[in-house]
Image 1 (tube, rainbow, N blue to C red):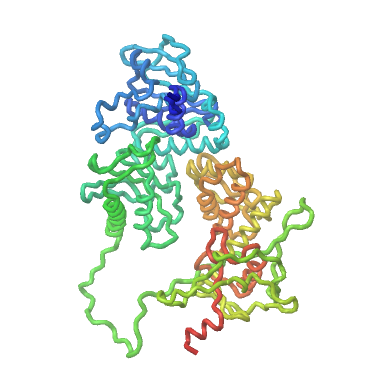
Image 2 (tube, rainbow, N blue to C red; image 1 turned 90 degrees about the vertical axis):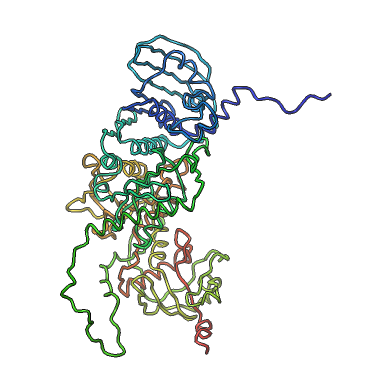
Amino acid sequence: MKSAEIHVLSDEIINKIAAGEVIERPASAVKELIENAIDAGATRIQVSIEEGGKKKIQVTDNGKGMNEADLDLCYLRHTTSKLFNADDLFHLQTNGFRGEAVASIAAVSKLTITSATDDGDSGRIILEGGNVVQKQDVQASRGTTFLVENLFYNTPVRRNFLSSETAESTRIFDVVLKTAIAHPEIRFDYKVGDKTLFTGVPGELRNRIAEAIGSKIAKALLPVDYTEAGVHVWGYVSPTTETNGKRNHQFLFIRNRPIESKMISKAVQQAYEPYGAQCKPVSVLFLDMPDMEFDVNVHPAKREVRFANQNLVFLVVSHAIRDAFTKDMEANSPLIDLSDLQDSKPEVPYGFEEPVSKPAAAPTPSFSPREFTTKESSGDIPEMSNFPTAGFSFEKPRKAATQNDLAQDLFSTPEAGKVISLEGKVNETPEPATQWVPPTFFQIANTYIAGEDSNGLLVIDQHAAHSRVLYEQALETLRNGAALDSQELLFPELLELSKLEVEALKNVEDQFKHLGFYIEHFGGETYQIRAIPSALPLSRAIKAVKDFLDSIGDESKSEGDMVKVQDSIAKAWANTNAYQAGDKLKSEEMAALVSQLMLTEEPLKSPYGHPTLLRFTLDELAKKFKR
């Protein structure tokens, strides 16, 4: 009989596999240890790390601690004080319950656990790779300290896939902030090396939000408290007038447990949609519902949650936010006495109708588009010069257009669904003698630029087009190590940044200077802008910085891939500094923008893949008018 090819894995391999599922990076270890501290009744939790958590993670709490017997069991797999039977999985009031966290950390690190109870029962145990190497009797204060050293020392492949120290520290910071917001009654301290980055003093939720993301934002938040169909939603959301929210300023909890849910994030966004597409909400929302209506035992790291009725939860979250808006408007709306007003309306001449609302005033013009070209010598700084508004030819080689380079005919009916290809139009090279002279352009709703060419009508999205121009400009600047022109401010602009924004700024500080921004620490979470890009109006400076830090998102943490980081920064720069919908442009600004767009590498797409222009041919227009 042949020997079996299937065999039982060793405990060492099993533990490492389990560790890979639960402990993905240093932030995962911090999350598990903090949750255990909370379940132990801690009122103070201290987190200290070195080298992004790769060299050292220390989590100390003042919870109930462990006696000698518990200390001997806590590092073994599938050991827990929170479960006694399978039904308990669906009736949990604690954060941790799998019984794998400490065992997983111990399997891939050198772990020292020191714990003491109120009874004076204390001890210390030291493990390497999950094996006990030493036990000690020590005197310690009530509580538990987990010291994790050399994380992933015995799984070098996993260690190699970790990001930079700064990026890993920021991820740990995110874990600390989310947990601190979920538990404002607990004091939190977070240190990186010898520097304290966050201190959360026990208090009210709004105060904790102010500590985490800024007092200015916290003061403006609206309270949410809504119950429908057994689902309770409470917390805070930003008013509809708030346009500076960040994607990383949306916090979601269920039973005070931080979770992720794309479905709920979409529900939050949908609640704001009627109030304007530019609104980026800040939200801190807590959900509660019957035990059997949700399951957090889906992902080994307990990040995701599954709902028995997703549609119901989606609607209740959306209704809860709308309810907060309604209450706010009712509380702040002036009372108007209509008793003296006549029911009759003033007469309007036949054939005329009163406008529903007056047109909004046009905003002030944005900065003028500039074209810059890098000199032949790599050491020269790119120069900025006005691009000619006269004729130009398509003599620059273009990339071949693909099927993605299609534009939807805006005048087509839904039934027709006519698509006009731009292939062979913008990208093909005409005869050398043929030159296209830019026509007189005009704006539509201060958002689109329209004009004719030899083939028909052109409609250009001014934001998408300007984004493409600025993106390629910024990318070339970053790759060449050059710098854009700056203008020093006579009176520096002050801005308040949240903890996460401060960390994001540190990650891209050098690249920020190349793009013309010079920002210095002023005190606390306040920074001062000392210089801005020459082409950027002062009125946009603070918003540009805030939006820039928001747009770079998690890409700023991927410092191991500098190409990816530079691309992300260039996109953020373009998106936040380009003309916006509603910006009124002069005729020469419109002509210059079109000229610059045609000289870019990919004139048909914005950096984010959105179309920059549409062409409606003369034949298509004739068909529409049935000529």
